[in-house]
Length: 247
Image (cartoon, rainbow, N blue to C red; front, top):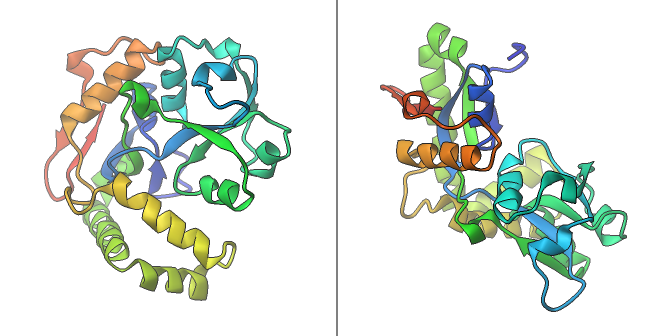
């Protein structure tokens, strides 16, 4: 919104930003199912998301779908001691926090490697099934550079399609040219975890369903995270060359 970037990747909370007045436009959906989950230390064989009440939990920005999940479970915001996210799994492993928001594609690898016993709580358990990693831009970018927006979208989706079809090659590329922050095993884990989220063998990468966005808007409204959803303020589909929608 400040003009420091032309494109971004965000969660379905982009819908809330749009309703708040930010002129953001979703260009494509990468994950048909959001990878956002809550992870907590496993303290007993049978435990539920309700055991997070009174606990210290790190929340990352744009994880409002997890708040919607907690509220739908009857867990008020004040019932959890929310903390800023450090993005360091050691904080959970070493007991500085009791839970954290996480990507099912990333942090779980570190927890597994540490042989840490954890419990995953997913919004999908209560029917909250949001999109994840949405490619977006600003309205002004579409108006002033429509060809560039279309080309960027097409190139991004082509890259995802190739990556999912050739994971080993892309892992080699990442390690050789971009980042050695993680071992090869991390990227193998990430690639495997992404397969059921993208569902690229069933659905074209980037596909968005306006009815699904309507459902996301209604879920936010029901959870009290936005104004009551109105049909006339619902999802709009832009024409070619880039299928786009927003609330």
